[in-house]
Length: 368
Ligand code: OSB
Ligand code: MG
Image (cartoon, rainbow, N blue to C red; front, side):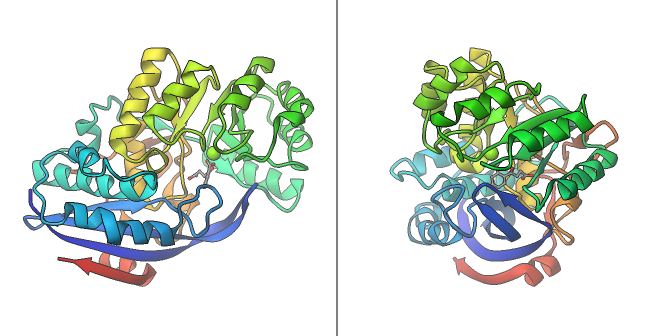
């Protein structure tokens, strides 16, 4: 396949409900959508970098720059037959995993559409549907939080993740646990704590949580290993794992018992699938994290989560939890057993709606 056309779109979609984490509150998703065309077939890839450097140093601005200056010129007019080959093209590029991943994602979609294969088939994924949960942001007060959780439980979500931060942790988790004694519950601190907060973690350790996600520094594994030794609850790393090597290093020193895999954070589907395999060989379960994606990114997450070592529910909620008018269709709908169906269409299995894309677009740039 000779890549003869690449287009970047800068988009903005308002959230159905604002999303607050320990690093801030967001009311809309700003992101880049990339299309890559070869022989008249187009593949789409979503870049999960956010509007500011809060979750990661990558932003829409840095990703746009890395894409237009370096990544797109490296692939335009090249002959690429397998999406995995992109890893070699981008060998020299240090960092910027979210920018790299969106090109690779677009190529997997393109290859799938060209060959008549779904992404799940290309990944030898096994399941037709995947177990999912919902990530609930920090709210103004506990009453509003309880109302939102009740709504999600009514919708059919059987696993809930609570965002925590200093001042919104032990009491909140205790109240939620008392109200739903049997709910599968986990927490995500997004690096808001340090080892000196051990007393808080010892208290959280009493609530039968599935896991505590990324409690300490966003680039740390050493302190996480020290903390894991003192807790029964598994620590799950998110931010600290930006590549296959980081996953191996974390496992080598027992920094966690579970890994959250996000395709964008680790630099693409190839890296995500290698981390999946590495963890499977080491007896470490993984689950698929989310970045409040549109249906294009969500479709990738659902296919990935159909791989066998994705043992815990993913942060992959139904489309309606995020946006009123997603830019790709069909929407993902929650089944009564807290699962989403894995798309079986070619490539990622969802199709960009040009009218909706035009409506969400701030700007675009064409390379051909
Ligand atoms: O830490 O998992 C996280 C969203 C944006 C940035 C970081 C995270 C999250 C989520 C949302 O928890 C998960 C979702 O997409 O539903
Ligand atoms: Mg997280």
